[in-house]
Structures are given as structure tokens and as C-alpha cells.
Image (tube, rainbow, N blue to C red):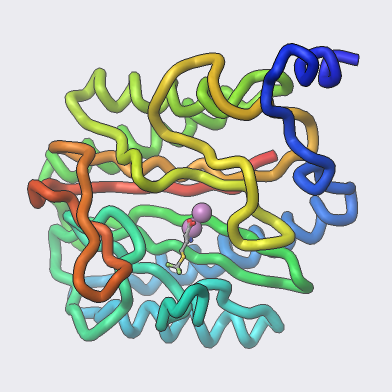
Length: 251
Ligand code: MF3
Ligand code: CO
Ligand code: CO
């Protein structure tokens, strides 16, 4: 059997808990569908003048109405139901009274827990009309996600995903954030493996059928380096450059 062969050769292969049953995959799919539906609502409603607290309220209320729970709320002390990351914020922005203005780019990252299953997905939104520079970053980052997804096939490895994403970002003069990565997801918010958005081919965990994990590249116009603000969550680019992120849960 190929997997055992790989294990003998010293590769990291997923443990049994990372390989989901058909029932679990169906549950995770439903949670993802709900998160995606919530992002559709945000897409309809987002506009200049709105606060990130208002986005939080829409996400929170709709999640509860659907009989689900927002995974972010109280997760390791995170105070809100969704992450909203504007412009130079890489990820984990906390909703507050910040008002969206035309030209902002914002990532809204929704994770719903439905019947105990986690569905984690995020999108970029362009508020009003953004600069060409910002639009291009958003588009290239989406392409990074899609190219990463194309690498998801049995017996590829997490490093193949990271390598492909980083190389494409670099081709456009951008950098891929290293401190945060994709992750196994489904029965818990964050499971193994860790999925880098940079690195080398033929490194990291071997991918096998029915694993479920996220790919969520964060791409910066400037340096990949980040720092965390005093709130303990908000990750920003050290050079103040724009950052974009798209996230998908895949299997
Ligand atoms: N949804 C984020 C991710 O993609 C995690 C957010 S954790 C929070 O992994 F606590 F900041 F909400
Ligand atoms: Co997320
Ligand atoms: Co995630």
C-alpha cells in the first residue's frame, strides 16, 4: 500500500483522525455552505459608510438564526463573531466602529459551527472603487488560492501547495505571509496539518483522500513580515503595505 510505503520512508502521513468519514465530510460541507451563504449576504450589503461592527452583527445574527454558532466568538478569547481585516491588516482584524470607506479592501473571514462541524472560508471585498494596485493584489491573491487548490491531489504534499502559491505571488512582485497558514478543519477549528503558503515542493505532510483542510493565502504588496497589534490579535504588515487573503476549505 502506497501510504505505508511512504511512512516507512519517513514521510509524515496523516493520522486516522485527519481522514474524514463520508458523514463527517457531509457535515463539514453543510457548515461551509452556511459560511459561504453568510458571505453572500455580506457581499450584498457591504458599502462605504458601514462599520465592521455592523458586519459582525449580520454574521452573528444570521449564524444563530440558522441554528449554528460563530466559531470565532470566544475562540482563545477572540471577542467577536467574525474577522474583518482592512487594507494593511493581514488577518484577525477585530470588528469595531471603524467605518468602511470607498477604496478600502477588506477580508471577511467566517467560520460556522453547524451540528458540531466547522466550515471556514473568507473572501475579499472591494468597497466602492479601489485603486488598480489594490484590485490587482486582490485578483492575484485569488489566483494564488486557486493555484494552491489545483495542487490538492492524493500523494502531493502540503509543500507543493505552499511552493505554488509563493512562486505565483513572487512573479507579481508580492510576498506570501509565513506566520499564518492553512490548517486541517472539520471536527475542530484548527487541526493538523499546517498548510504553508510558501516553501519547497516535496515537503510537509502527504495529502491523502478525505483529509479536509483550508488554504488561505495572505499576500502582501511589500514585505511578508508582520506584527501583532496591542489587542493581541490584529496582524498587520510591518511596512504598512496592502495585504489580501482568500480562504477555502478543501478535501
Ligand atoms: N478563521 C481564521 C482562520 O482562517 C481563524 C480566526 S481565529 C479568530 O483560520 F479567533 F481570530 F477568530
Ligand atoms: Co478563516
Ligand atoms: Co482558516
